[in-house]
Image (cartoon, rainbow, N blue to C red):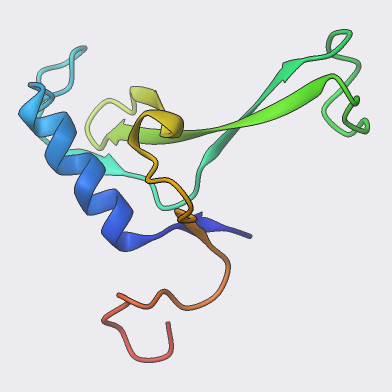
Length: 104
């Protein structure tokens, strides 16, 4: 399963903090965690017929960045397209080139 590139998550975290996201908007806790795996959102098509159905030709998938409060569990979702750099993939399936852990 794919996950966000660590360098991408660092850049997004810095931008969200610059915009003022330093605490949970629900409970006020500052224990916010950026999740490594994207949230997927189906967009377009004829409507939901179940999550296991095949995607339509008119349907696309948006990849969302999830930020979760460790205290209350509230999740905030952000459109990854806002933070993309042209021609570079933010998702990796194996070890990341900026992965500092041995073995990925």
